[in-house]
Length: 411
Image (cartoon, rainbow, N blue to C red; front, side, top):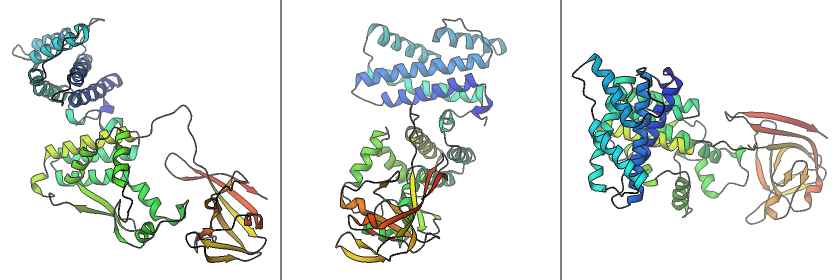
């Protein structure tokens, strides 16, 4: 299939916009009772057809009047094709004319459409997009706009491979690949952070400690917080992602995790409905469409001011013996002897100053030069005066997640 990047940028933009408007229109038209959402959906579908036919006209080098209306555009496309084939019939033209009338009634006169009658147009309009996206652009309508709106190249490339699998009829492989992409985008980083002691900002919970010695680790495993599902739904709702559709996606694909906390190889756990009956093009396209739409909603949105994540690590020396305690029962777990030097991380140390307002601010993590023999605990408030700082490294992460040294300070 032709890649959207191979098309002229203006045509590509209009196809992407048309597909986005089309999807929004269908979503709003799914209601049986909300006439306002349904009306909004019809207007969006009209705008989708308008952009789509405009892209076709540009592709065919048809000169449109500056104030060209939708019906004028489709008539010019029809007339252009009839020159080459007198028997040419523009599929779906009658339904588009009806959609145009409904849109004008809604937009200019405030006339409410009949939901049951108007919904009969949706199938023909969908067929119109499918037929002519293949005819003029050699593209499957279901794939237009989805992949090329993804900002992260690695994710975009993975989705393109899924599209190829679907085109080749490799539906089982496509569904497994989609499950892995979903894990990579939504869950992998958080799970890696939870498994890696070096990335703890606070002492790990008992559940996290169990997870780090487990095999076959999946997201949500060893999590006893009863609000997890509520929080998960709220988080997805905030991003505009339907949790129920996500559940359907997860039922049709697989739960992805790691084999253990060290190797981090992917493992896939399939549900009871995993079988050939569900390895179909229809299901594969649904999962692809839903996932990429979710990725687009989830991906980073640009802001006028972008903040940088800053991590401070220190080389320290004990001026006196420093006792380190386990927070729960105040049990002594380590004594850093006077004169001992080591690498350390503190929560209560910010930009060269102590900010200790409560006991949790006295958290310390100490480790050797190879990031081994890690000890985590709390010192007594006031013992920060026993710590001498020899060197501080300030690091951040670039757009690819790699560590970057900002500066070093020696004292």
